Length: 335
Ligand code: ATP
Image (tube, rainbow, N blue to C red):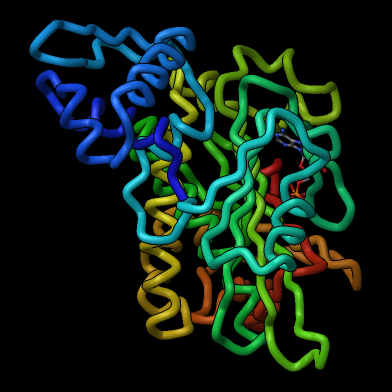
């Protein structure tokens, strides 16, 4: 599904030396003119490509933060995650787009990426602030072969993949606020919304989508709307450096593929629980469970192999908290 553009970019990126025009033609099965056209397009977009006669082409430098379908695909070495990639400059929200593509039969791993969302969504009809140029918004489609009662674990699987990728790229300690928020230094950098579509007979999962919004290059808290200024942050604010969104997305998709396959192997979180718990914000300390049936406090003790949060209440009783209707907070703040 890759275009010539991303293939050419990938060849240049993966080679330390010059790649001749002929090599590019042979490898990709396209004409010399086609190669030449793509090289020119890439140069216009700001890629610095050196052309030397009899040697060929060499990628000297990629422009600052190119975030495009070709740039992402040229970096991606996954088997299925993100290989069928749609990139929109603007869309309402990537979750409904991904659902539409899934309805139309597009494969497991299909991914929709947007530069900007005009109607980004969170859980329970909440909204997700989605300005252009600074964030990563994407939704990945999966076609699970497991029963619907396992579906809620995909939220935790996604959170783990994203947290690990963030830490790999930025070096920041990325925590997970159960079940699905990613926090850095006590503030939220990622929101995740997973949704499920059942077959018409309502007995099997037709597909699931996992939507992810990451605050990446916001310079300061003032860029967030007033209501979330205290609780939201970005990777740049916390790390002090500009982060390449294409690199981050590539890492997230790669991690997602690995973590998802590990989950599929056992259809439980048994192989991932330790990794998840090592990032669990508030583990072994006080939490407040905002349950619509009544709020309560307790000590968070980790998660079960099926993804529930284990909370020890003051009366000594241990309760399992099911994701869905509840939010969890620290005793004295957001985390
Ligand atoms: P919480 O425990 O934070 O209430 P939630 O899982 O119920 O989490 P989500 O659906 O993940 O919430 O996200 C929606 C909420 O996130 C919004 O109500 C808002 O408070 C906050 N929010 C919206 N946009 C952003 C953003 N770009 N960065 C950080 N937080 C945001």
